[in-house]
Amino acid sequence: MRSLEPWVEAPLSAFLTESGARLTLLMTSSGQVVAQHGFLHSLDVMSAAALGAGIMAATSELARVMETAALDSVTHHGKAIGLYLAAFGTPRGRWIGLVVYGGETSLGLVQLFFARLVDELGRAAPAEPPTRQVLAEDFEHELNSSLRSLFGR
Image (cartoon, rainbow, N blue to C red; front, side, top):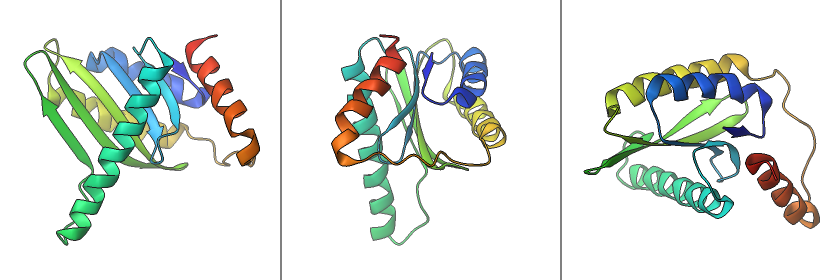
């Protein structure tokens, strides 16, 4: 497991142990990766983050067009794996969790332990958000630094 925010590690580790998830990704609603587990390549992480954020944005827009309450989660279940994608609030803003699981667990267990993860993240978040602002000219450096941190390189 790799995380850009140290306070995320303990709740995420507990979730991984309890849920039996194969892959997990926590990101902001804009697709910025906060933590990941199970991904082997940074390109896979960045692709999954972009797709997950896009799916949740599209789902929110569909709910708005249909004039209904926001749809906060999406699930897909295939023969070998299932996918759970859920948006949730944190003291640091709206985040998205992407969980890929296999036959060794179930959607119900993933949802149960994901709800616990969300609660624990809310309690663990530092009171003050970081004040550092990333400027456009620093973006590539910050992205590369984040990827090195997530993949230990």
